[in-house]
Image (tube, rainbow, N blue to C red; front, side, top):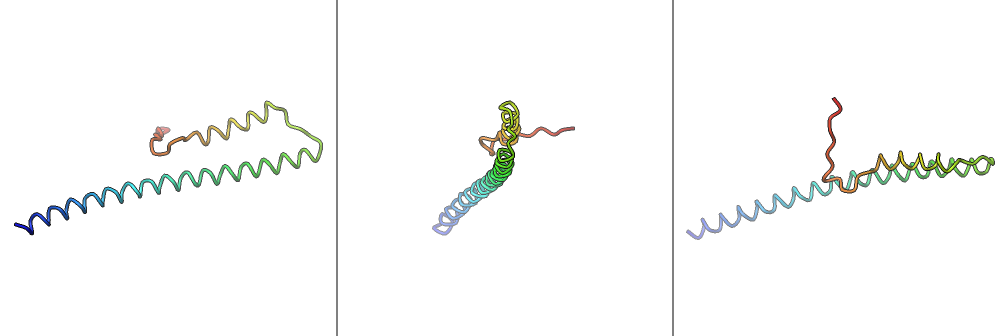
Length: 92
C-alpha cells in the first residue's frame, strides 16, 4: 500500500515537472522570436542611421513626412507586444 501511494505521488510530480518544462520551452521560443525581432530592428536602425548621416554630410535632408512614413513601416513590422498571444490569419 505504501508503494502505491509513493507511485501516485511520483506520477503526480513527474506530470507537474513535464508541464513546467513545456511552459519553459514555450517561453524560450517566445524569447528567441523577440530576440530576433530586436536584432532586426537594431540592424534597420543602424542601416537607416548610416544612410541618414551620409545624407546629412552630402547636404541633402529628408522631409519630416518621409521620416515618419519610414517609422510607420517599421512599427507595422514590430507591432507585437506579446508574442504568446499573436494570431496570424492565413492569406488564402
